[in-house]
Structure formats: C-alpha cells, structure tokens
Length: 199
Ligand code: MD3
Ligand code: FE
Image (tube, rainbow, N blue to C red; front, side, top):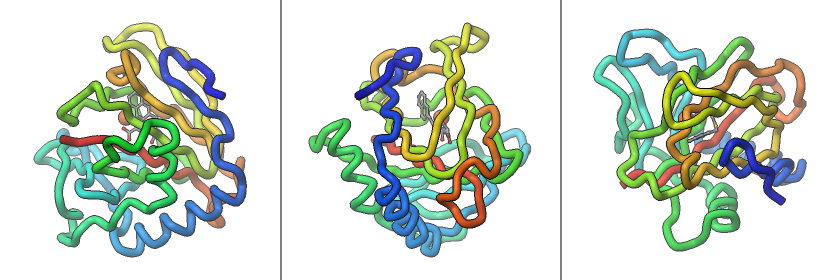
C-alpha cells in the first residue's frame, strides 16, 4: 500500500529481492548498449551522478542545456526499456500510455542531486515513476516553489515512488546515499530509474 510523502505516493518494498536482482540483470544489458556517462550542467559544473537512458528518448545535459535527445551522447541509439521496468508502470500507473524515457542514474559514494523540478516534458498531467535499487538514499521533497518547506524520507532498495498531481512539479533531490547499506550491487552504490512520458 502507498504512503503519502508530501503528495507523492511511496510504495515501500514494492519489488522483492528476486525482482530487484532480475531488474539489475536487465539494466546490465541497457548499460552495455548505452554506457553511463558523466553529465555536465549548462553552467559547466560536472554532476556527481553518472547517467544513461533507455527508450525512445534519453535525458541529457551538457553546455548546450538540459533536453531529451534521440541518441546517446556517443552517437548510438538508446536501447529499449526492459519489459520488467514497463511492467511496474503498467501495474501502478496503467497501460494506456507507456513511458518514452527511462533515465538511469547511478550514485557512487558521495554522489548527490540538488533540489530541482522535472520540467523538460510536454505534459505535466502525466505522472513520473521512480524506482530505487541498491544503497539507501536520503530523499527530500518540497512544494512547487523554490525555498519552501521540504520533508525528508529514506528511499530503500525496491521502493517505488509515483509523482502525480501537485507533486509532479515539486522540488526534489537526493541529499546523500549510505555506502554499504545494500548488497544488491556487487560494487555498491545506488541506481535510480525515472520513467517519464516525454511528448
Ligand atoms: C519528485 N532523480 O532524475 S528520484 C531525476 O533518485 C531525479 O535519482 C532522483 O530527480 C534520483 O530527475 C530522485 C525521485 C523523483 C523523481 C522524479 C520526481 C522525485 C520526483 C519528479 C517530480 C517530483
Ligand atoms: Fe528529478
């Protein structure tokens, strides 16, 4: 059952241990086809996460700005979104419109993501779905204006979060991860999948 997190719906432990292992196997195929890259903000600051995508579009950032791109920065096609990932969306959001992009964020020791809004998509009435795998993360979510009150919560491996309604444009970020808190990934770290309808 879902827990309300400042308007977001958190499904703690949605994925069981075996499902998490299977998902990581499917993500190895994605990362083999579309290697993780080190993104740079439009202001030239390197981000501490590494990222790649699957689907019709990938989300990228570099000196030219934030955007959805139909190719990996190295030039290849994005691989398809694994069926195991689409199954989560079908179950929790519905089968009518499937996501166009599955952003894969990898957090190693010390990686974080500052407070931001997700607003590069065409239709904010479409929810966003996030899947956490690996190490625990301190997640922070606020309102739709920068500088407002925020609340924090832990995201654990196997948790799924749905951001719809007013929470779709909420400021959110990851303050820190806890290295060594999960054994899911052999080399440690955290993976977050963010599924979005782009256009
Ligand atoms: C709240 N990723 O890639 S997931 C992102 O853990 C991003 O990698 C974080 O924020 C991560 O844009 C947070 C939780 C999340 C995802 C999308 C949201 C929270 C959200 C969209 C709107 C509001
Ligand atoms: Fe985000």
